[in-house]
Length: 109
Image 1 (tube, rainbow, N blue to C red):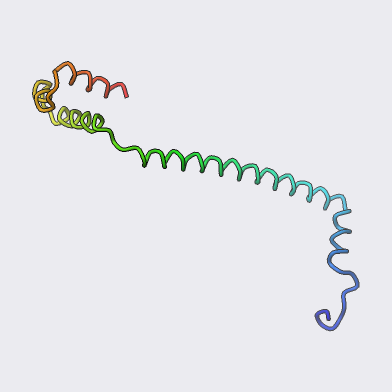
Image 2 (cartoon, rainbow, N blue to C red):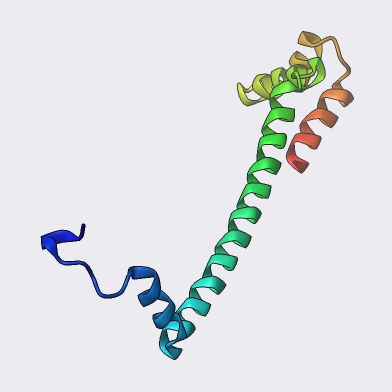
């Protein structure tokens, strides 16, 4: 039974079919289908980027800090604190030339 006791003369599906045959409605429908296709493409690209980002983050979290990197960080810190090359070389049991190399490589990064 329809609202207010009246039965509609046409149903919604019939009205929709008639509207689709209408040129402006058909054009709008075509534009909507194009927009949907573009949105699906953008969604897929975004999902691919997200998966790539997650793989990068996962690999980064797994990778432990190498002892060499932490030792180099100690050399950088000592140098930043104003210690001389000789003092740093003694502290890390390395030659003065090796300390210079470590510091020079830091500047290249």
